[in-house]
Length: 69
Image (cartoon, rainbow, N blue to C red; front, top):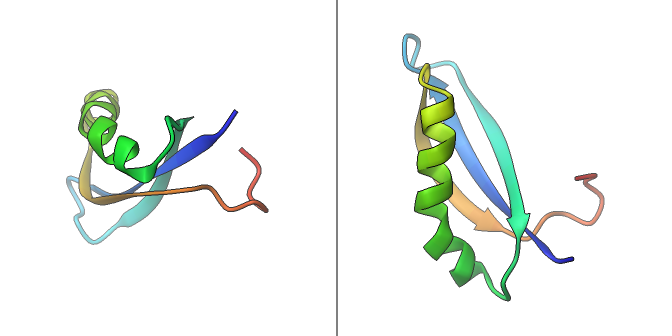
């Protein structure tokens, strides 16, 4: 199974300077463009589950081969 990595930079709503990176993994359907098309839905789901965090930026990438998923 090929995976794609949706990388979110998220910050605390109450403390905007406190940020971290979150990785969401899902099945790749062939290209990063497919990730870009699916990302808004995945981001909305994630944001709904994490109301104290604000998504500052996001990008799609193929996971690093050395990273365990």
